[in-house]
Length: 425
Image 1 (tube, one colour):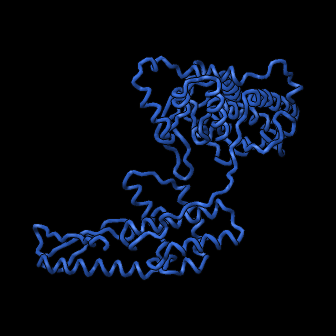
Image 2: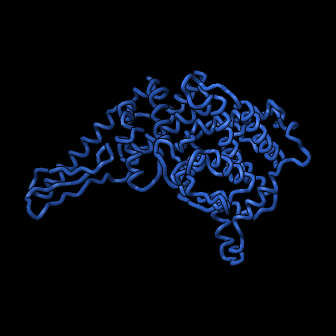
Image 3: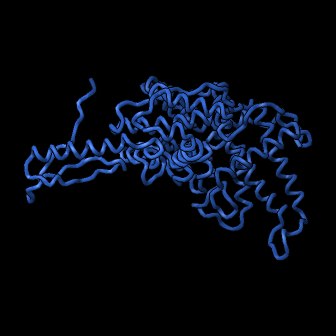
């Protein structure tokens, strides 16, 4: 037998004879309602009737009708509840789920027109099968099912349905595209190639005509200027392993170009704007000389004094570079490096996060203490927390120096000995 249904308890203000009650609506907000009754038992009868009617309305809704308010910041019950409880759901994730809901889920009539109270686990499995037969990618199908499961879980949590038909429905296994990891000598060759690439673009800019009559700068000159930024940006990415959002939010005021100390205190969170880094873990790191010198060169190329609140790896005017901007720069440079045999033509996926994987792997292989790597990269995983709890009692760990990581990076990623610029070009 199921658990006994609970109803709100009536209450009466000192200045009123009528009983009121408070309930949580389908919008996730708390509402105050008058019973119109002066007797407590009559008020309870009113409340039971009112709440049963509310539940009956929900049970008669189709999945499409019930899900209409989901994954919109203003109306999504799940999003509103999580934010009120201090839990994090990003607006980018919300927008992605809303797109899946509108494009793929609500367009499936067999599923979306079924009463939400009558949905069974088999309905969800049948929906998944139809999506796979239509040729939709496995990853997208898994995301659609996950979006549905969230809605059904929230409906069950709110007692709008008696049980959750999404429970125990897992993801379909598929071969994920693995992030590539570059060996230390490959990163060294890539960094050396960046310098050659910048010099080449600067030579092409000499004497170039302006983009159009009256323009102050030519397209080739702009490319040469951005090459300095891109060289510093990619070197910083591989030498620090920072997350892409942390790189895009880094300001000049957070970096000491004399000591190399860098404060990671902000991250670009897309639609959520700027906020603290992942897990709210702000940290101090040291920048390897291989990246620090390039950042100094980039700063020297900018006209006039550079305001501290400008973004380091943004536009020449200090505006923040976008998500696609950073990824497009890295993708183009990796493609050029492969075309010129600096990197091999293989199936490795060298993304911005792959630079983080690369540094983590190479630091550990070089014998750098795992706890120091954890601190430097801003980890926050179950394994990292266990490692911290086990080792935090040992006072000698305070002797670990985060700037040792920068020294290790300079040693690992030093340009190949004996390689000439012509060989890397």
